[in-house]
Length: 241
Image (cartoon, rainbow, N blue to C red; front, side):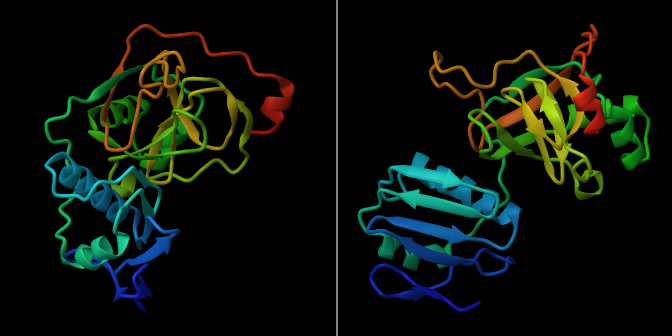
């Protein structure tokens, strides 16, 4: 991969041990955008940035914003110097560390639970067991305020989005799509495979912080025994399935 020029004109490419070489792009006078080949590489870099910021080994930075395959840093006094330093970093896989996991109670009675069980080749009860036994981590946030993209499921349990997205997904729905698990913080259209629902409030502007989940947060889903009646759907919604 051809290196890109940093703000001070230095050519560089960021490397992680055993990983494809991502690149560093300047953004304005005080920002860097680091593009990576794989989502897991972006997670690993974000985790390393948080570790270095916590122990004082990272230059002062105003924002660290991960996405699916990028990490954006803003507010750097000397972004060129950091871009030169990044290639020598070792990026271990992200770990929960000392942070306590956010536990989200879930009623596993989603309308796509049987479809996910078929895709996994297991029973619905086994889907619940495997999903709730997984240690998840918020890779990044987006789509809607409070929506976190959670990783943790092994590759053989990744599932495709629905062929026909729903016109309305109820608030609190727990869904799967590709490598991610997510919880809808508000009612919206969506094409994820819905396996359950939670009453946890993902986004509350009156709360500090407003978002229950932030990038890097470890998460566990806790099955709830008491069933909750499924919300009624309209004919329009059914026709969209």
